[in-house]
Length: 95
Image 1 (cartoon, rainbow, N blue to C red):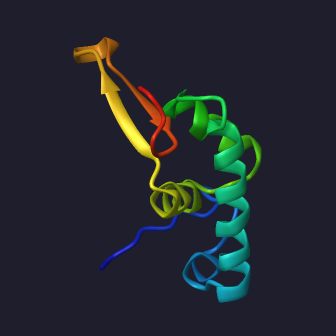
Image 2: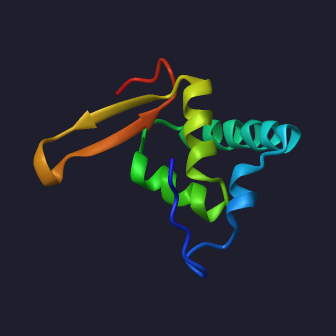
């Protein structure tokens, strides 16, 4: 695998990306699961909105996706073409 890393393009260096503290990682996943459960508690939410809110809370996209999988969050697609959207909801929620 080859990775091009331009200086100034990212807020971290390659070593920081490749090094994960298992305890910190587990805590981040737990926090993300709790956060995502709260966001989806009142029903489905546009996936793009969930991702925007996660960024604001400094939850990485990778951690958010892992939380989504762990919780069994359902992704539902509506529409066709450029007007189509994805919604996320907790398991068992009506779509």
